[in-house]
Length: 557
Image (cartoon, rainbow, N blue to C red; front, side, top):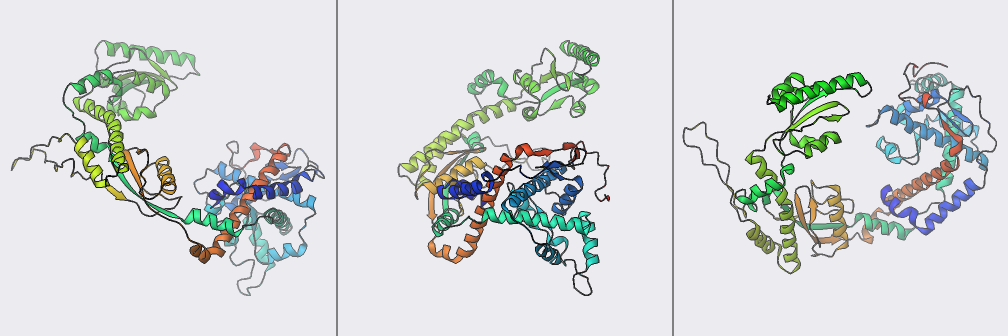
């Protein structure tokens, strides 16, 4: 919902005018540095905002509240910064609230405490993290930590001792300190509400957004897989394969071997010793000694040492650039005549010789990309010319499925050593042949075809909602496995009647999204205007690498 709002909400002239007006009133009309003085320089602060100090103890307390259920996929330092951003925004909002004359009454603070509320601020600009943890907005009431409030379990009435004990356990605060905490959070909340107040959702706007989100489409599609092309459209025999292999030797994937002699660039003497050792091993290989045996004896790479220095050729793509470049320059069976230096030390590199199977596999893989695209284009063109999808597929299979794969001879009775024969298919019967399939109904955020890339999905969804029923996409969609021919089958717009049934809930959700976006926009402007008055001390940041972790989270002041 928020992502869709980001695409349209703030770009509309009317809404933009509201936000700009709000910013002019709340920011430009006031001096952002008025009325504050910096505290003593020796105070321990995680951050100073317009002279106000966020103490490490307060930061850690907020961290414990926000992440009481754990950090969902975050490193501790990232989670710590997330909490700090919320506290910084709180202080900025408080500063603006005070300059506007907003206040929090003693009764308001007392009532929030009496009802067992526990507030903490989250960054307005990153609401997804808060929602992931079950928080709906930037000013969160964490009631699951104290589900019964501060009540005596016997009388079910507010109990001062229970309150003091609970506050001490949760945030390590005295009652007076906690009251001040609540007051600051409530004042920041009033400022948030003031920023959100001008935001409105018109009925037409809500309906247009509803139609955009809830309308559905269905597509028919045909997948031309490279696996089918390699099997039925490309011959593995003849001079063509040999000629190709001579011109494209570097494209043939074969295992790679290397011997690593470690050397530290920061220690010149050690590095030079490693170089001399590696040069000696390389000379022995050039004179005919077995590479694998020398790798087992001398290599410092534990991942390949016991395998004779061997790695699968497919893994080279993930290696350091110097190693990868050296391998790409070698033909199968070649030894690099010089050492290759990387951050790990010195490498002696060799590519294994290519088998006939390696050559044929590389040849087919290279040829299949172009042929799969050509076959998909033929099917699409035939369909656009008026042929049915079945006829277009049949014609393409007849054109491209020219070869019949060799089938192993069935094992003779009693011959336990013979391999069983694989099931034989023909080009027009193979389960992976091009076939007409139909997607389930999907919306603009849907996933019409499983197991394809996000870019391919985006392209198909865009065409499905822009094309007309029976339209065929101008170009086949590329995937990791081949190409897809796409045809719009059906599109069902959301109706006014459907909207009316969900109006109240939907409008409320849209309003909340727009209000959150307005707040995020306002806070960004506020931070920008105050960036010279925000000072963060990395050494006091909980979870930072410089934090030795010696200070207990629950220690008393």
